[in-house]
Image 1 (cartoon, rainbow, N blue to C red):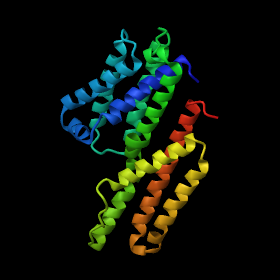
Image 2: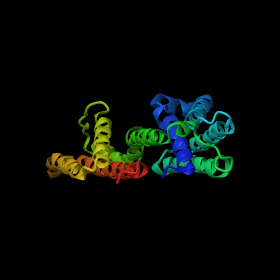
Image 3: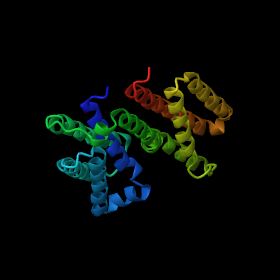
Image 4: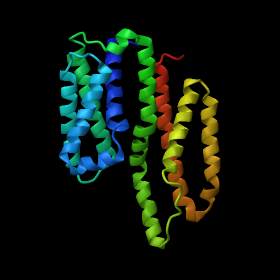
Length: 250
């Protein structure tokens, strides 16, 4: 698995995850929509991350292509009035396509290797796979799942408007933190081979919400939470299994 293609692709994917999710705060994401210069800044951050994680210091064309392509993709995305799951997926697919094209048609033909993998190939691979997985399970996963459940959120808002009631407020960002924790727990269970723990987690969450399902007034919210939970579980399982394969765990 630890081939030059894998090493280069992993390095640039981690750089993308760091630049596009970890270092992109909600305030920066909002400012990007209003200011082209914020979009330029965000694109430069992604280019700098690619340069740092690739660590082939003479390959200045790589961060340049990453920065320019990132700006063009994000600028095109900003022309759409309404954000959606499909727009998010198309945006990420285009970014990943640029990475793959760079690896296949530029880095591999020029025999470029990541400095970190030349120093400690096994350690670099392990660290990058785990860091990529953690960002996917938290920041990126939260966004993806948010897009998936957005139509159901709108149904719940419409319901409360119709019955002229205010929804019960939970803890600020409590739902996000619960999602992060459950996905991280699944990651630990899968990597350690404790698949029974995943089943226990699903059962515990389902039992916890069963009472709300019986109340017709709370049915929409309960079903929304369960849908979001199972999307979260499936996403976490997919990322965790891929990480296990990438780490060569049998």
